[in-house]
Length: 79
Image 1 (cartoon, rainbow, N blue to C red):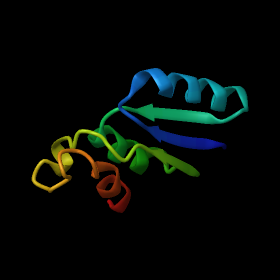
Image 2 (image 1 turned 30 degrees about the horizontal axis):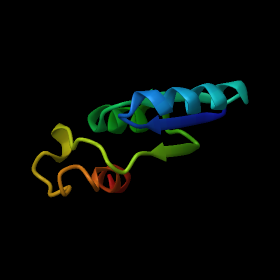
Image 3 (image 1 turned 180 degrees about the vertical axis):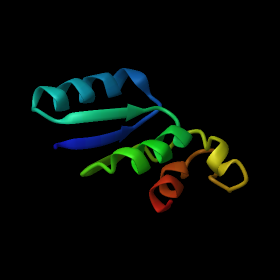
Image 4 (image 1 turned 135 degrees about the vertical axis):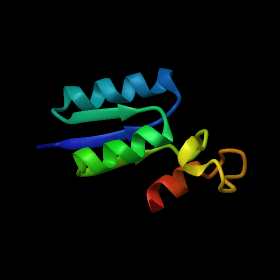
């Protein structure tokens, strides 16, 4: 199964990328929040992760210095 987990909180450009990937036969799961991304990663274990680096930290990283969201994606990746 061709799985991609696409994590990005910016909806407009993401729609273009999701459509393009799906047209090329990929099965894509999209999440907009860090907490959802962590759950989705554990449940679908994708082949590919496309991850926005600058996102709100969510509950998972509310006690971590993500430099006001500039490095949240790095923490999601590490988890």
